[in-house]
Length: 306
Ligand code: NAI
Figure 1 (cartoon, protein in one colour):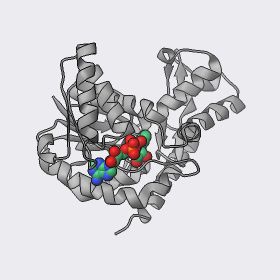
Figure 2: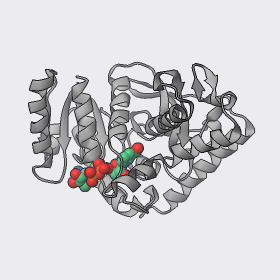
Figure 3: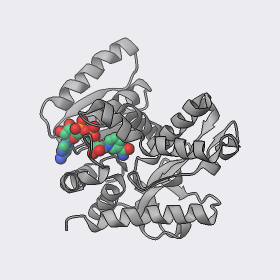
């Protein structure tokens, strides 16, 4: 199989590295910066001789080289710096997303598309509107990363290993993020039974602020190792047709009482993209929180330039 990654910056190159290391697919890195994708691809091809993986990585500035990809990942755009929210990136990144999605779709009309550029839910909606792609073949990566940050916070708090944890963070990939402690478990036991309310609130905050915590340390940009791994996990589920359920920015069309909106919810992933939005049995409070998160995405959409 062939995976194109648009944007050979921190997130795109890291995703390419992990996809190649796992031998999942040939990777084409494309960027507007001349030399950047070529240099990073060559470096990864040198690594290929160390690691002995068999897939190839190539770098280009020309969409012709991305032709007939099975999956296209879009990471092109600016990242936030300390003090910025993901929502602050909207103006610049909307222009970039518009220019990318049309060219990427023209080269690979049958691909499954994964948007990564922030603000994620708004950019994925924009890509949907601009491209006319079927909703099941266009999604965003946010919830896998957010859930990994929740899992990390639980492990730190309880001293357990990630393998024991199933964590669910959903909703907007931004200030309106939602965690589901009742469905977040350690060896099958909900964390709401393993810690008091204050501790639950603490791990939820650690998750919601996880991205900002990384930005505050780095100062130069935002996270890329966990984002890269989260992209690779989605690519693996799609190419492997695994039907795995994970938190993905998907088109919600009536589920959870939310209409026509892109946001992170549990979905089943397979070779054709989103197979279904999975509805968890939420209580009134959880439903209200998810709908409030949807409202935060709608507020972002209202700020999209025409
Ligand atoms: P970066 O600055 O390291 O890389 C971005 C790359 O995009 C640069 O190489 C740039 O030349 C390229 N680019 C700009 N315009 C382009 C165009 N029109 N076509 C092709 N390439 C273009 O940034 P980084 O850290 O890789 O982040 C990329 C994006 O991903 C940001 O918007 C960031 O906020 C977002 N992000 C999203 C996450 C998520 O969970 N959804 C997680 C982490 C980052």
